[in-house]
Length: 228
Image 1 (cartoon, helix red, strand yellow):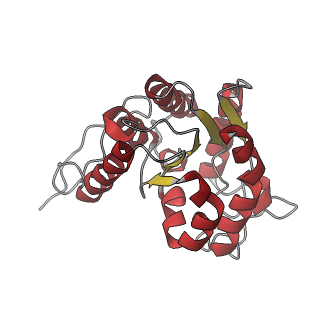
Image 2 (tube, helix red, strand yellow):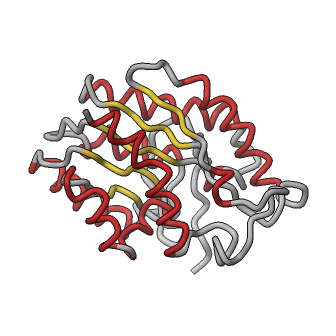
C-alpha cells in the first residue's frame, strides 16, 4: 500500500507519533506511552528521564541506570524516534499524572534536526512548552535541561549538528537558576578538535556503554543538587 500522507507537525504543537503506512498512531509509541502513564500513576518516581532513543537507550544499560538512579526510583520515559512535539504530547496526556518528581532529565530535539521546516526557534519553543507542561502538573519539579548531544563526525559536514548547536544556544537562555538548569556535556563526547568518534557513538548518534558512563559521571552532581 502507498504511504499515507501525514499532516506536517510543528515542534511546538503537541502531537502523537503517526505511522506513515497506516495513518494511525504508531503502535510502539502508543504502547510505550501507556506503560509510562501506568508508571506515573504509581507516584513513586523521584527522577524521570524524558527524551528520544538516546534516553531510551539507558534500557540497554540497566545495571548502570540502577546503580546511579535506583535511589531516586527513576523512570525512563524515552521513546526512540520521538521529536519535540511527541514528548510534549506525552507530558500533556498522562505521563505526569500522579507523579511529582523532584527532577526531570530532559533531552530532546535531535530528531527534529532533519526537518527543514522545523526552525531552531520552533524546536526551542517546543522544548520550552514541555518544561511549562511539566511545571503545570508538578510545579516544584526541577528540570535538568541537557543540550542536545553532538551527532555526526564533525560540525563542518553535519548540518544536523550545526542546527542543534543553534537550538542549544536558545535552550541555554531557559536556565533560570531555580527550576531549570541547563547543562551542556557535549564536549565530553568529542576529541579536542570537536570530532565525534565511532568508539564513543558507533553510528555517530547513539551511545555505547562507555558513553552512558560518561553521561552518568557528568550529571551525577548536578542531578543530586537538584533532587536535594
